Image (cartoon, rainbow, N blue to C red; front, top):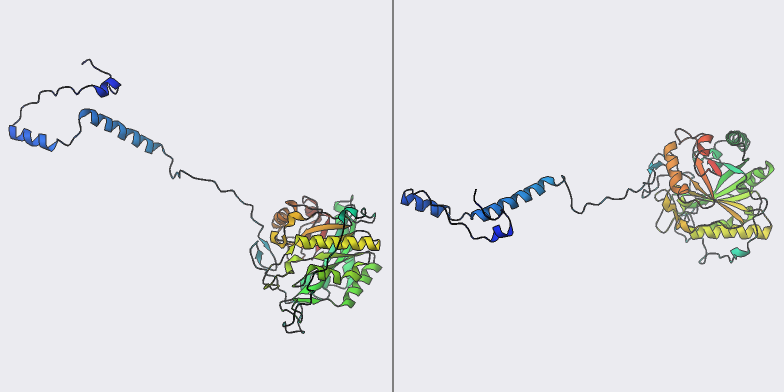
Length: 392
């Protein structure tokens, strides 16, 4: 074995090339041709280095994972808004509304008139710090409230339009008994929720896209509920009027102790929007204004706190919801209004209620559309437990 530097050592790399071994003598002409043909090949040392380099590159390639992207990132999974159904149509966050508002025949106005709203919205100057303590007659949280919803005489808009008032009262008491049996610790108060202004697919004479229930109808329900010692909620669908104008228009009835209020942002339309073509929205500041208005009303009239329901089935229906907060003198209930299977309703309740609780919480059930209908125990198993339950 020849003595010499270790291969690939510094001495080996810098050592002079050894003298070539004597070659066997071939034919001179053949030898010249071979030398000429192989003259481009590298020397022994260079060839060795090149071989090692190729081996390293090849081994590195084999060791890489398949389909690897050097800057691969993992996208966060966003919990989707539940795909609930509203009037036989799946509703998602960016969908247009599918609810049919062809509920009442429009016989007045051509839609060319101006909106019947003041140029300046009414304002309240309330010092929240000086609001009175909650009246002893406050309904929540010691009670649970159970409501039947709808428009008089229209079976398509809820159970309230399917039966006469006396039969409805019997059915409502039966439904309340089921909740009291499921949770005996919390008494159930019963109520009617009457739609006081109904969204329309046409602008009406004042351009509001609303048809108001006659004052005589509101009077009739006020008298019936008072005579039977139950609560009454008037529901406002807003249209293209302002929340302030609509709420002030009900003041005469809100001065009754047992009469309360509900806002339905779905039908609160902006410029260019039409009920039935768009899902509306209400600003948090309008809800806060309503809270303050009701607090002022109860303080001036010496009434117990009013309950204010705000319906919601998509996140966009209440803008800047994170700015809402309780106001002394009024009890705010945000109510999940979508319908679908029990699993979809649980998901919708989680998105609109559980993810952002404010004060009190509610849910609506649909006798015809919810398949299957959640049982009272199913409802009471929700978290947070609903303080208010509506049946439509």
